Length: 260
Image (cartoon, rainbow, N blue to C red; front, top):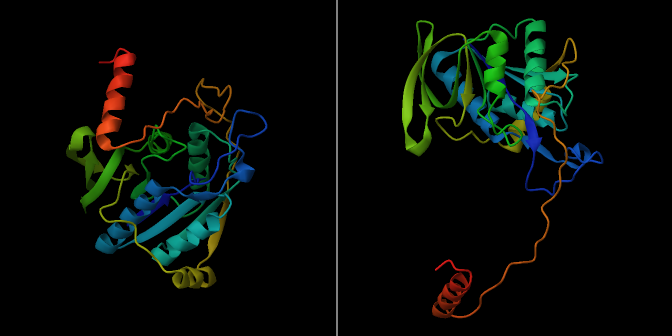
């Protein structure tokens, strides 16, 4: 079986974010990028499926600063093929990014067909979780999102667990090949020591695949007019004293504002 994982580098929100000179986007030169957490879970699910059913795992990631580290770490975990997509504009919106990825997959030998294409259900740059369904749409494949487990693969079908609000879960059967948006893997993403990653850097090969034609930016009618950092309001009031005194002050403030 062939499991293909789409992974992305996203801004590390632990670091201070800066606005670009155009005032409409983040300054990507100042960003520290890390692997998307949900994409890491998609990789883990693919590796678990490989261990159960055999086959191979291909990891594909658009070119970005430090993406090589992501790919070598994937190899150290058990991925069989590493592919770096070149020519993908880092400022693309999600629809255009999905189009670029699909164009590259279709142009390179051996990337498709894949029995399952897995990617994260969402990233901090894609909170709507659109990348997986858009990839599925462009490839004409069925799709299920917010997946937390693939419980069985047999007779050209996969059984998956999908998470809903309020803790509910549902089990679905989907025909293969298919695209899954993974919310979380059945197990936490495996840890690999630095020594194993360094060994992968010497033994694993990263293939470069060019996007055949640049995909135009498309935000489906949505335009970012401006971005700005939160402003310091200075209206916070710190209450000091014993728990009883603080509780009394809170009641007084609520009463003054007509909330009690």
